[in-house]
Image (cartoon, rainbow, N blue to C red; front, side, top):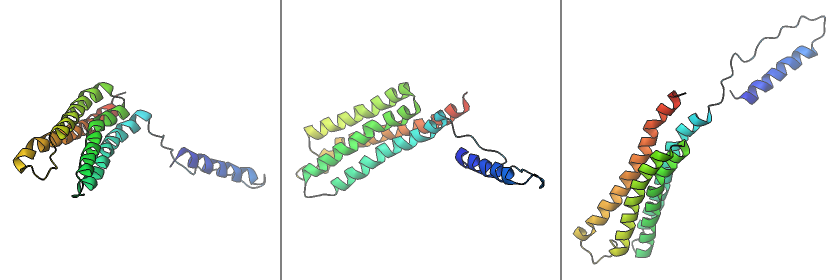
Length: 170
């Protein structure tokens, strides 16, 4: 129950007691036994960090996959890849940044950003969506894209695993 509801119930109870006539016995019973306090900002951030990081990685991934599904347009497929890579690069920065852990954001974010940049550079160097390429020629792109995705996932998972330690510390 929020603090506002508890205050409203308290006002109703005191108003009822004040409206009673003096001849009537006034018995005020507490309507709310205890009011839980709102979570601290750091606890909220500990919970929201991994969630924000996961959304930062997943939403561009879905958007990129939708653009990849356009088999007739290589330009749309490349745009989808860049959208995916931007989400992978930003996810650890967001997840640790929301928690206020900037050193961890720098460590995990730099790794995911570096792998995303390497993938983008390779994409500009050799287009894996060109139908004239054999599948073996697309392997480096697949490995780079997968490493960018896993680097982002590791950064987000780390912010999830480290969050309980922040809640327990004073």
